[in-house]
Length: 342
Ligand code: ADP
Image 1 (cartoon, rainbow, N blue to C red):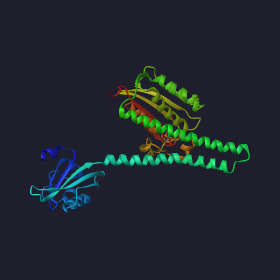
Image 2 (image 1 turned 45 degrees about the vertical axis):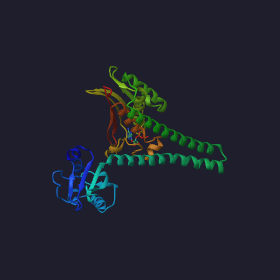
Image 3 (image 1 turned 180 degrees about the vertical axis):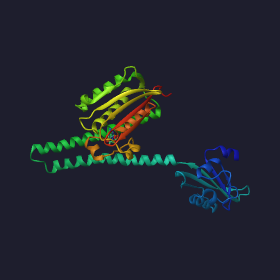
Image 4 (image 1 turned 90 degrees about the horizontal axis):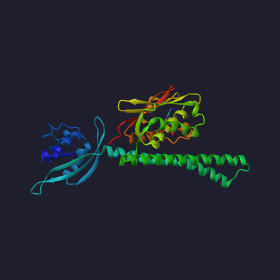
């Protein structure tokens, strides 16, 4: 039994009716931060040092159970354990202790928190434009402005808010498609010259940014190739260029370069804009994370652009990184491996 328990990934802890530890496998010792060599004869309080764990064992020893609880065990990093506790009975049907089986559910709980936060964030983001549209429509219905100019101003606001809803929903759909690719590993890729993909991306910019032609310079050798999904890579680089133009003043340049690396290629977007403070960098690629909410909204931002870039890079087996200095500008780099992952 000991050999079996030693190799299982579940943590197993057995205590006798006096709350002394009878057995603790390696996984269990790791989960509760105990020494796997030093438990025999010691009490569960001494070995586990987690009051909730002791309490659970005591409940089962007192005749309750089977029980299941989530227990937070502190230490170097907090960890959530899902613990199933049952009474142990001897061959003569007499209680001889309690058995606790522990699983690390920290990751699951973190994902669950992220999912909840995401739903709350999406609802909030959608609610803002909808509230505004409703307000203006009600005003138009109840008290229509007499002059055409005021009417057009109201309709202009409603139109912008509807565009905003459209942009948020399009970005959310992009993200959900990207998650699907990541799960099914089904991204279609072709070996392409990067220069042709990037030239197209810059050309498409001019529809959104009339001054882009004068501001954006592209430097990419014709011999650089990578296995890419062209529409997605264009979307990612387009998002980075949009941001570079959006968060810098109109007279500053934006550079789009590509470089060869030992293990792949780098696509680099550099601006000389307002830059980003170091405290924001770790969370910059999270959904809906914005440094300056008001400015992002005013510029028509959804707060999802960089999350999309991150997911597109990852769907290619690559990653995106950022370096920035406040007041000096930012550099975003998409690293793509030359070899498509199997
Ligand atoms: P948004 O739609 O708000 O632009 P993004 O996900 O594209 O959302 O970017 C998140 C935030 O990161 C932006 O709101 C902005 O504060 C900051 N940011 C992104 N790119 C740049 C940049 N090139 N320069 C300065 N700030 C940037």
